Image 1 (cartoon, rainbow, N blue to C red):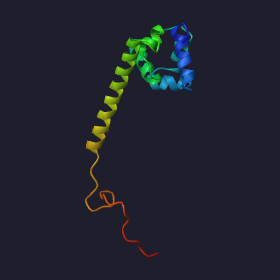
Image 2: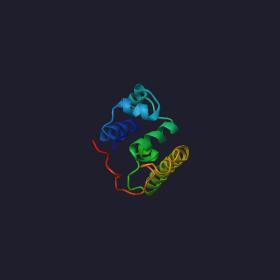
Image 3: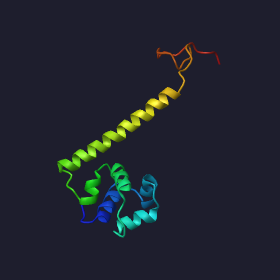
Image 4: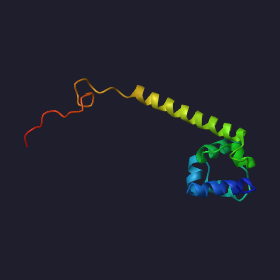
Length: 122
């Protein structure tokens, strides 16, 4: 990775084949802000740094300091962040399941039998 936060962000964005607009939309900032980060005019605030790390599947420390991917602290931070995202998704899916009514009994959707019913004449 390159020697500055901006250089690392640019490399990560290009590696992910994302535009500055794509990154901005995911992180909740403007594309001008992303451009300013990449040109080292400003540095991302900690909440944005965490969002960027989630987006790129790395750790905030790796973006901020250029910590090696083999750095155990950076790896632990990245895995912990991924685990938190997975837990959020599990909770979202549980809420969705609870909010979705079950299909009525006897309907094709509720049937465990994969065989189709009798064919209707054309």
